[in-house]
Image (tube, one colour):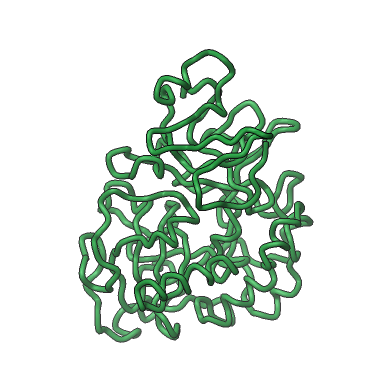
Amino acid sequence: MKVVGWVSSLVLVTGSKIVSVTAGGNCSVYSTGAGNCEKGCGSCFNPGGRPGHICNGTSTGYYCASDNPPPGGDMAFACMDWTFGSQAMQKAEAAFQQRTQQDVYFGVGTYGSASDPQRGLGACYRVRVEGVDKDLLLQSVNTGSDVSNYQFDLQVGDGGAGAFNTCAGAPFSMYPGTYAPWGKQYGGADNRSQCAGLPMYPQVAGPMKAAGDSLVSLCEYSFDKGVRHEGGGNPTILDLSRVACPSELVAFTQLQRADDPSTFQLGEYRQDTPEFAGLSASQVAPQCTGPSLANCLTRMMDCRKPSGGFIDNIQSKLVVDGMRVVQPCLSDGYTRLDVQCGCMDCYC
């Protein structure tokens, strides 16, 4: 059984059988006859989650391997349409603008938040960045010890694999070839011209081609829109505050906080965000080159299943039923994995 890409309706097709997934949960695709799945999805953490491909291997669902998959087994990855400037992201931005009359860029990544009880996972932030023509509305789906408070690490095409590279260089990597064309471990390509040397598509290329994306175009787009600078520089964050997560953005990740603010407006909710509205770039952060990258928009792309895809990082009281954990992808970067449960027969 395989569901290609992501769908907005909660309907799962398995051969000739159609299984509707309700808010209460229907985890029958995990059943092997023990009867536990028929009892309210048993012990599953995310019943009612959006359907997807059932991960093959020694572990399944939200426990699907994130590295070194078993022979013949599947592996969970970051999704490529989460990347800044993907065709699906641009369509979602347009839909959000039509609904709210607010013109922003969408994206996902990591927000360094020490005060948030879930380390920022699932929260959305509106960010004003030096030299970028529109605000960014971004969801934090990952964590990282190398991400400072008031820093947002944005997933862009070849943004740097950081500490956990599953993009290239291994047989199970998402993309073909070595990591050499990708540039630096932290930051990726320093210049737009380097994007042309990247592999165009994952090893399983069909879904990215069908989506109208390529790694080269996603890399170039991030330079064109100013979210990274020529020479490897990072732009300065001029203002940032937590906002409500738009449904158009949550549709990509399937992680939804239950404690969202009620506004999309910048500056109205600053529970765990800085008071630097109205300051110039030089006043906020004279240098966005390190060692501290606070108040900087940095970048990443490790292709790895993010922290928000591990249920041990999630507090159930802080998330919405059926949207409790990030829904990652197969190695093609677009086919979503089913993450309602973590094992067959709904025992975990």
